[in-house]
Image (cartoon, rainbow, N blue to C red; front, top):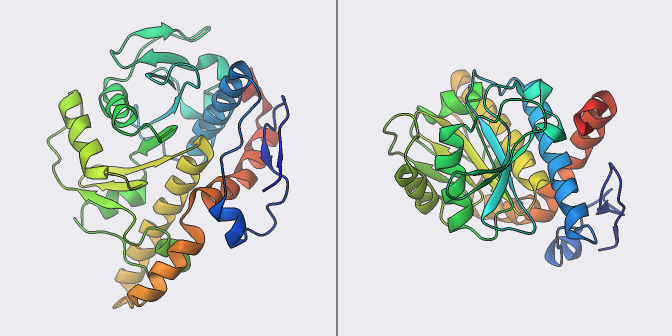
Length: 278
């Protein structure tokens, strides 16, 4: 696939994303900036945009929820939001760099450098267990939270939901607010090599090889939860046949599709809220 690399607010995006063909999916490698410094800035920009998008979608229940992006130079460090700043106010300069011991290596420029203990307990262990994961997203979004109480996986009742067929897990060992890294370890173990999890009585968790992929998966999974809840309230659902669901997943459940599907949200939020780049 052709790519465009630019040191700008747009960053590297596929040159042709109007249609995602199988050959593009197969050989897809997440575009990278030419230097570590530029790649770091690109990830931070998309992370700040991700928080703004979560804020717009009302995935902002109190102090709950967190998105992280692994640093391109120090793989045992990740960027995260400071606790207590509303998602709709997060800027690039508000992000802080944290290592896997919980030390704030680079504080935010202006706001108070408070680290969300649950964010550290979950994300530090995910990043440790999954070297392939660049970003992870978790929130207490309404439909994901409601669906998580059912103690079941998503059914392939729509094309979008089929992306998660046999491609997500249920973590059914909720023991309270995640303040201990041992629970982060259990979540990471349950996730295995999958890109998404339903945390029972808690919410949703998605990961990706880019910030873009992790965020699109979260948006899509929340929508799939809402769709199934609505369908079940109306009657008996009729899932796809397994072979159809697997085929559909092979078409839209990959990193390339997730990366590309994020791009319209990036264009939208950066056009309307350019202060996130500050």
